[in-house]
Image (cartoon, rainbow, N blue to C red; front, side, top):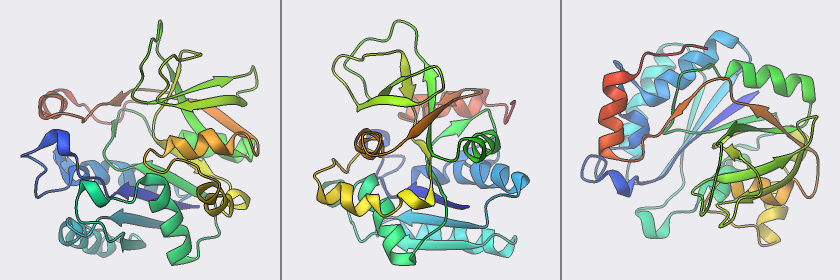
Length: 248
């Protein structure tokens, strides 16, 4: 399995902190956000290669980080998606398709937004995928959820099958929120180019799942812990003070 770390965003809501520095490399508990992710996954032994997708502006920062991880024994690729500011960004779906095309990827893909802090291991998600053998998303319940939502919302059946997924709905049809963590079965990878050509929205990564679940089976793994929002400077400072590492 290959892991793609999406790190090409500009985190404009956190300016000036992220004006010239990428959010995925911010320090939390003595490690970068990306370090928490890849160090956790390394313990599971299922990821053979990591791909970081950066924009052009932040590329030098990621070059230093990738060199460090390579020195620690990680197989790492770094891609520059060519964008230079928030107005000409490719969007997450096109960044995934760019990585697939640029590196000719043909293995199962774990795709993670690289600016998230969790208290659980992603390895349980990988185990769930191995059991289901379909493309998989994560889900967590938000009791009494009302719109408009800033995230995807999924409707699922008793076997975790995704019946419907709406990215950022005005009126949510369930209480199942979908964070930006996905495992794509290798046989589904050619559908990225088809989905984009068919008019799938490309900014938010969940937009592709909204399209994909109409084409093939997608299952939803219930998140075993908590995801912490690093969406504002205030939120980041709170996490720095309170984060205790992986608990699940």
